[in-house]
Amino acid sequence: MEKKKDKKMEIELTKEEAPGTYANLVMITHSPSEFVFDFIAIMPGLTKAKVMKRMILTPEHAKRFSNALQDNIKRYEELHGEIKSKSKNDPHQPFKYRGPLPEA
Image 1 (cartoon, one colour):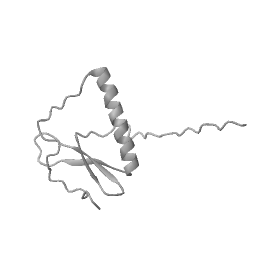
Image 2 (cartoon, rainbow, N blue to C red):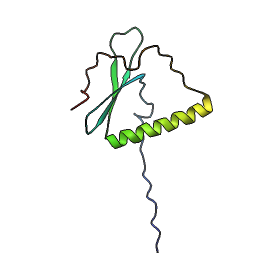
Image 3 (cartoon, helix red, strand yellow):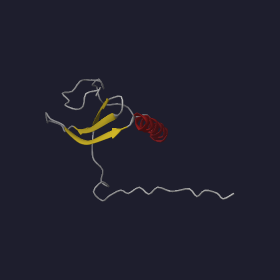
């Protein structure tokens, strides 16, 4: 029998996307068919924040993203120690957020 050759996917990172985008807050909403991640930059002294990137994932990919993030945090903490939250705010504190409603 002939072995199937593994197909490799090439992932392109453009010059424009390579520097990345800074965000220090993410607001997550969902509907039955998608999760919406709004990555936001809050700057000190300003009363308005800006959504820098919006990512929309299927529920399956959102779960895979969550699992991958948890795995990476675990590995990071094994190398560098526990990540401690410096925020005294409740992570569920409401913001004036004009994004999609949780249920579409």
